[in-house]
Length: 88
Image (cartoon, rainbow, N blue to C red):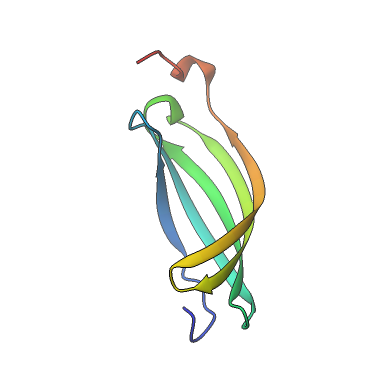
Protein backbone atom coordinates (compact mmCIF):
# COMPACT_ATOMS: atom_id res chain seq x y z
CA UNK A 1 0.00 0.00 0.00
CA UNK A 2 1.71 3.19 -1.15
CA UNK A 3 -0.21 5.36 1.33
CA UNK A 4 0.55 3.39 4.51
CA UNK A 5 3.68 1.43 3.58
CA UNK A 6 1.99 -1.79 4.67
CA UNK A 7 2.72 -5.04 2.91
CA UNK A 8 -0.16 -7.47 3.07
CA UNK A 9 0.77 -11.08 3.62
CA UNK A 10 -0.33 -13.19 0.73
CA UNK A 11 0.15 -16.08 -1.61
CA UNK A 12 1.47 -16.27 -5.14
CA UNK A 13 2.13 -18.66 -7.99
CA UNK A 14 5.04 -18.75 -10.43
CA UNK A 15 4.23 -20.69 -13.62
CA UNK A 16 6.85 -22.38 -15.82
CA UNK A 17 6.52 -22.46 -19.61
CA UNK A 18 5.02 -25.97 -19.47
CA UNK A 19 2.41 -25.01 -16.84
CA UNK A 20 4.16 -26.48 -13.77
CA UNK A 21 3.69 -24.16 -10.79
CA UNK A 22 5.70 -23.03 -7.75
CA UNK A 23 3.42 -21.97 -4.86
CA UNK A 24 4.63 -19.39 -2.36
CA UNK A 25 3.64 -17.18 0.55
CA UNK A 26 5.07 -13.74 1.22
CA UNK A 27 5.22 -11.02 3.86
CA UNK A 28 7.25 -7.87 4.29
CA UNK A 29 7.49 -4.30 5.43
CA UNK A 30 8.19 -0.83 4.10
CA UNK A 31 11.76 0.37 4.57
CA UNK A 32 11.51 3.78 2.91
CA UNK A 33 8.72 6.13 1.87
CA UNK A 34 10.49 7.97 -0.95
CA UNK A 35 10.82 6.15 -3.19
CA UNK A 36 8.50 3.44 -1.82
CA UNK A 37 10.80 0.57 -0.87
CA UNK A 38 9.85 -2.78 0.63
CA UNK A 39 11.73 -5.73 2.12
CA UNK A 40 9.93 -8.96 1.22
CA UNK A 41 10.38 -12.56 2.36
CA UNK A 42 9.01 -15.46 0.30
CA UNK A 43 8.56 -19.08 1.40
CA UNK A 44 7.94 -21.82 -1.20
CA UNK A 45 5.06 -24.01 -0.02
CA UNK A 46 5.00 -26.61 -2.81
CA UNK A 47 3.86 -26.76 -6.37
CA UNK A 48 2.62 -28.92 -9.23
CA UNK A 49 4.35 -31.11 -11.81
CA UNK A 50 8.13 -31.10 -11.40
CA UNK A 51 7.73 -28.64 -8.50
CA UNK A 52 5.52 -30.99 -6.47
CA UNK A 53 6.90 -30.95 -2.92
CA UNK A 54 9.20 -27.99 -3.69
CA UNK A 55 10.79 -26.05 -0.83
CA UNK A 56 12.62 -22.76 -0.75
CA UNK A 57 12.96 -19.21 0.51
CA UNK A 58 13.91 -15.85 -0.95
CA UNK A 59 14.43 -12.29 0.23
CA UNK A 60 14.04 -9.28 -2.05
CA UNK A 61 14.17 -5.51 -1.81
CA UNK A 62 11.67 -3.92 -4.17
CA UNK A 63 11.81 -0.24 -5.11
CA UNK A 64 8.70 1.14 -6.79
CA UNK A 65 9.44 3.92 -9.27
CA UNK A 66 5.71 4.21 -10.09
CA UNK A 67 2.60 2.14 -9.42
CA UNK A 68 3.39 0.03 -12.51
CA UNK A 69 7.20 0.05 -12.54
CA UNK A 70 9.59 -1.44 -9.99
CA UNK A 71 13.13 -2.69 -9.48
CA UNK A 72 13.81 -5.85 -7.45
CA UNK A 73 17.08 -7.20 -6.07
CA UNK A 74 17.60 -10.29 -3.96
CA UNK A 75 17.98 -14.00 -4.01
CA UNK A 76 17.15 -17.30 -2.42
CA UNK A 77 16.96 -21.02 -3.07
CA UNK A 78 14.56 -23.56 -4.54
CA UNK A 79 14.75 -27.33 -4.08
CA UNK A 80 12.67 -30.05 -5.73
CA UNK A 81 13.13 -33.76 -6.38
CA UNK A 82 15.00 -34.79 -9.54
CA UNK A 83 12.45 -37.60 -9.96
CA UNK A 84 9.82 -34.92 -10.64
CA UNK A 85 11.68 -33.71 -13.73
CA UNK A 86 9.95 -36.05 -16.19
CA UNK A 87 10.27 -35.01 -19.82
CA UNK A 88 7.09 -33.51 -21.20
